[in-house]
Image (tube, rainbow, N blue to C red):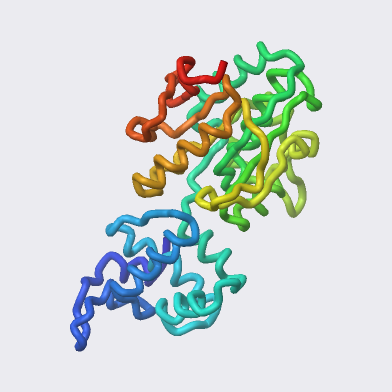
Length: 302
């Protein structure tokens, strides 16, 4: 969000109409911004990432894109969007995608899923296990998966492969570094902090870094979930795709859920977010926990 005088303007400005009749969104802003700009930005992020922005996101789009306009020294939101439209391989696309995708995440968010996975891992012995975190964001979720794995096996060399993907390459770079402010890990038990993190000193005071042994368990790679082909192969025992479907339109939600289910092993589990439900997708699934799903036993190959 913007701060200072920009946020003051955001609270007080009212929509007006231009001389040509085109409705202006927040005309008192530092940069010109019209309904056409919002519509174009919404189309572009939908094409790029599958994200479906609601009408009420007009001001969010301005607040986030205006930062990029200011950084690049451009004159308007329109000029920024047209620059991208005219150059499909422009490096700024990564920043555009990062700006308009959501990175709300935390360690052990919706902890029941990790407890369920940990209990299942404890019963799997030394059989090879594959886990996919399909929306890694800045890394909190895949590192929570890795901590759960280490605790389940009692060692840092378990027979487990963890793949973490995200469309946002900026977020993935942050995740791969594994560096977080102490506030981000403050709610973790002290024992976990000592076991899995190294506190920074000197110029790194106030930060902690994931221990190398834990970082090495997670393999990060970019992936757009709406691409026809994913950069992963094989099937998984557990797939985490939580709080992602809510940003897609209904048809894409159903298609993506079906593709994720097809990536599961016969007894594999798909974890979704607390407000996501695959009902209506046409899939025959068994509920095996809170927003945890498997292929129905009646629908599995013998």
